[in-house]
Image 1 (cartoon, rainbow, N blue to C red):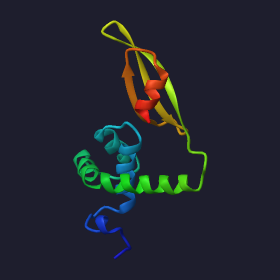
Image 2 (image 1 turned 90 degrees about the horizontal axis):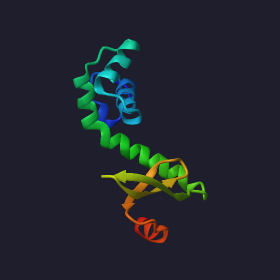
Image 3 (image 1 turned 90 degrees about the vertical axis):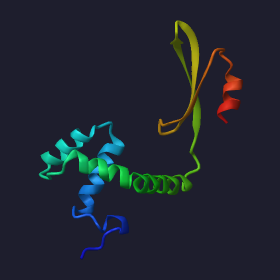
Image 4 (image 1 turned 120 degrees about the vertical axis):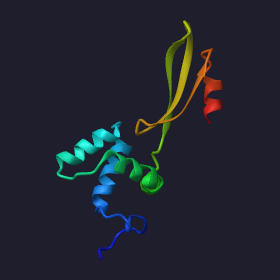
Length: 127
């Protein structure tokens, strides 16, 4: 028997295919059927229901793994930064301000909508 991660040991499909299917859906906005089609293009016959089962069962494990890798990468660097973005949005015809905290990789950390353009209070709320 090959050396498999403990959670993947009971699946008949290879861990590489399982990881690819889950990461395709995790990383890109693909539907289950799109993932099924992409795997079919690569020569693997897996139904979308199987991908859904893997997704529900293995998502926390992959998310924790990604989080750990990201934290390890960031520990070696001192330049992790975030900034405040402001966007004007209309809600029911009234202009509001959407404030978003965005990190250096472009990922939105938090967002808040206010009626007034008060940068200081938005920063306090987001911190």
